[in-house]
Image 1 (tube, rainbow, N blue to C red):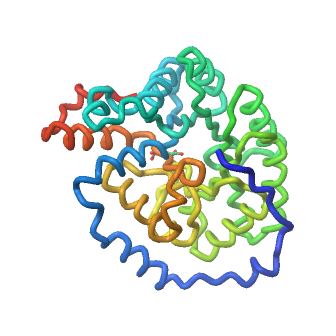
Image 2 (cartoon, rainbow, N blue to C red; image 1 turned 120 degrees about the vertical axis):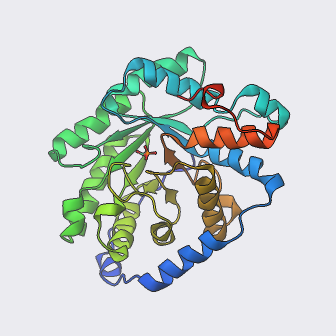
Length: 304
Ligand SMILES: O=C[C@H](O)COP(=O)(O)O
């Protein structure tokens, strides 16, 4: 990942003046979705770009060392070798950006990646993911545990109670403590936008999270009823959309949104991630179609 965000002092005056023009945001998101997507011959290249930005995720109650192991193997080799060979990409080291798991599964992921001689980063959710409703000391301890088990990226959730009641200073202070607990691990701050009510709140929470030293801001846990949406992306840009992203087509819209709003330089895993548990299956299927002209049966593309 890139250099850390050291954060700044909390500027409450700037936060209090934030107003977001909802109509303008909705219009811009609609425009971007309406853009003609990339020409067919470039689509495979863009889909591979999307793969390299994925935090391949499993966050389920029934996660075990063996499904985490499968996830790690899939992250190391996300697209079948023969398909990559046809695209002349088999020796380009195409992997996902990271794997993302619960704190209790970090050690499993580290062991699997080490055994496969891979240096892919392990990201861990933390701080009482997904609701964040555990005591502060428990949340801090969870971050420290994930780091000591080998996570080099920590995806924290914000305290929505503080955001919804306008306690921005308290939220800033908590996030600063999480950052300190992260040590050298990069910190992604999940806003859970589906629970923040308004675009103005999303913007304020984004600013507070960045002032507090978040290296990334991330839309959602994947567990809210509203997760990553395009309008919210216009408010947040420079971030990790996560939750409910399932299709190759959607991944192309996300890439094109970042390209339109921030430019090509932002399209790299150091600055942009897609958090997804089942997106990769559809991307691999579309690449299979691009290469062979046929759609693969699901059993032909084993998915973690
Ligand atoms: O951080 C990633 C999300 O939890 C993944 O959500 P998803 O399972 O809807 O792709």
